[in-house]
Amino acid sequence: MLRFIINRLLQGLLVLFALYTITFFLAKAMPGEPFTTEKNISEEAKAYQRAIYGLDKSLFEQYLRYPINILTKGSFALSTSKGRPVEDIIAQSFPNSLILGLSALGIAICIGVPLGVISAIRKNSWVDWGAMSIAMIGICVPAFTVGPLLQIYIASHLPGLKVAGWGSPADIILPALTLGLTTAAYLARLTRGGMLEILSQDFIRTAKAKGVPSNKLITKHALRGGLLPAIAFIGPSFAALISGSFIVETIFQVPGMGQHFVNAVIARDEFLLLGVALFFGFLIVIMNLAADILTGIMDPRVRLGSNQK
Amino acid sequence: MTNQITDTEAGTSLWKDSWLRMRKNRIAVASIIVFSITCFFCFIVAWFCKDPNQVNLANKFSGPSSEHWIGTDALGRDLFSRILYGGQVSILVGLIATTVSVTIGIIYGALAGFFGGKIDSIMMRVVDTLFSIPFLMIVIVLQAVLSEWSRETSVWIVSNLNWDKGFTDRITNVLPLFFALGLLGWLTLARIVRAQVMSLKEREFVEAATSLGLTKLTVLFRHIIPNTLGPTVVYATLSVPGFIMYEATLSYLGLGVESPNSSWGILIKEGANYLETNSQLLIFPGIIFSITLFALNFLGDGLRDALDVRASKD
Image (tube, rainbow over all chains, first blue to last red; front, side, top):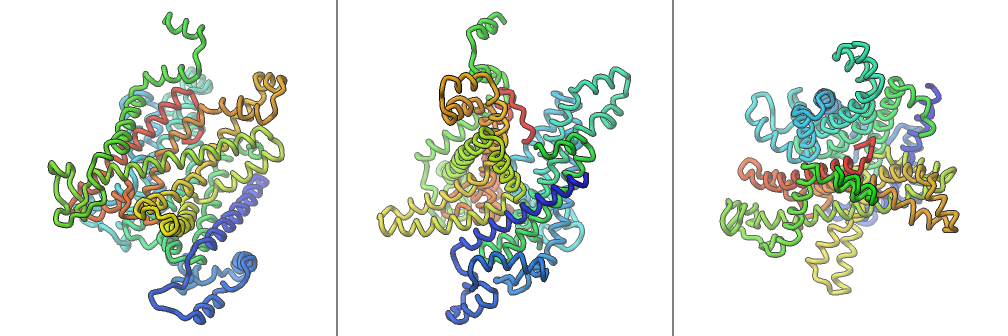
C-alpha cells in the first residue's frame, strides 16, 4: 500500500510539472501585453514594470524561476493585473470555492447514488426509466440554463434565498445545486452500471440461494463492488466541479477562484493564471490520490494490479 | 425466427447486425429522427430564413408573429433564424472537434497498442499525465491563444486577399474552437483503441495477414484499425454532445464564439440577461440545445447497446 501511495505521489508530481509547462508556454504564447491599461504608459515605465515582475529575463530563466520561488520562498509572484501577491488572492477566494465545490459534491452524492442503486434494483421498470431520464436531463441541460431558471423561479419566490450574492449560509444552496446536478446525473448512471454488473454475478446468485434477505444482499454484498465506478469518478469529478464553477460563480456572483482564472486569461495576467492553474492541479492530484486509496481499500484487485494498468 | 437463421448462414456483417438490433430500440431511432430534423433545419431551412444579423431596434422583444415566428431579441433580430444559424456553429463545432480528436485518438492509441513495450508505456504515461490536467482550464488558455492568432490571420486575409470581412470573421472566429477542443479530447479514445489493438494483434487474421507478407503498418491500418471501429463510433457519438456543451460553455464565458455571430451558447447567454421580462429568449434556445444533446446522448447509448460495446467510462 505504501509503495502504491508513493508511486501515485510521484505521478502526481509529474502531472503538476506537465501542467506547469503547458500553462507556462501557453501563457507566453498569448499575444498582448500584461500592462495595457486605459492610460498610456511610457515605454520606460513599462520596461520598469517588466523588470519588477521579472518579465525581462530570458524565457528559460523565467520558466525555472517560478517553481523555484514557490518551493523556496512559498511565493507565487505578484499578479500583474491586481498588483497583489497571487497567494493572497488564492487564500482569499479558495475557501468560497471549496465550500461551493464540497456542497455540490455532497448534493451530487446524495442524489446520484441512491438514484442509481434504485434504478439498478428495479431494472427496466418505470422507476428505472424515470430515474435515468432525470439523469439525462441533468447531463443535457447546461448549468447556465439551470442557474438562471433557479434564480427566477425559486430564489425570487422563496424567502431567505437570494438571487445572487455570497454572505449567509443560505446563499450556498442554489449555486451548489446548479453545480451538483450534472455530477449527480453522471454518478447515477455510473452507479446503475456498476450495480447491474455486480448483481449479475455468481456470488450474488449464491447469496440469494442461501436465503440472504434482499436488503442485506444490496447493502452487504452488492454495494461494495457496485459503487467502485462511482468512487473512481468522484476524484476527477471534483476537478469538473471546480472547473464547472467558472460558470456558476459568474451566474451567482460567488467570489471564488474560477472567475480569477477567467479574468487572468482576459487580462493576460500570467502569474495569476499559473498560480490558480497549479493550485487547481494540486487539488486534483490530491483528490485523485484519495479516490485511488479508497478504491484500493475497497477492491484489492486494483491495489495489486496498479502497475499493469 | 427462420429468417434469422438463414441470415446467420449467409453471414451478416457487424454493422448489419447492429442495425437490426438498433432498429428495435425505439429511443435510439427517435433520436436519429430528432437529430436529422435539427440538422435539416439548421443547414437547409436556415438558408431560406431571414438574415440573423439584421438589427431592427424599433421591433425589439416582439412576441411571436407571422413575420417573426418566435419573436425577436434585444436588438430586434429574428430569434428563429438566429437559433438555426447558431445551430450550424454548435453542431459543426461538435462534429469537427470530434473528427479531430477521433483521428488523433485512433492513430495515437493504435500505434501505442501495436508497438507495445517501451514505446507503449511512454505513450500511455503521457496520456495518464494529461488525463489529470483540468481540461477546461487548458482549453480556455489554448482558445485565448488560438483566437488571437486567428484574429490576426483574419486581418491579414482581408487586407491581402480582399475576402469579404464579415465572412472571414465568421470563419476565423469559429476555427480555433474546433482545434482547441479537438486537440484536447482524444485521450479517452486513445486508451480505448490501444486496448482494442492490443487484443486484436494476437488474433489469427493478423497472423495470416503478416504471413502473406504485408508490412507492419499495412496490417495495422488495413486490418487492425477497421476492427476497432465499433467502440470508436460509440465514443465519437457520445463526444459530439460533450463538445457542443464545451462550445456553449466557452461562448458563455466570452471566450468562444463572439457576437454578432450566433451559437447556442451565445443565445443562451444573451437570453439569460432578459429572463425576467422575456423568458422566451432563454427558453427557446435552451430547449433546442437540450433536445439536441438528449438525442445525441441517447443515440450514443443505443449504439453502445447495439454494437455491444462495454465501456467502463461514460
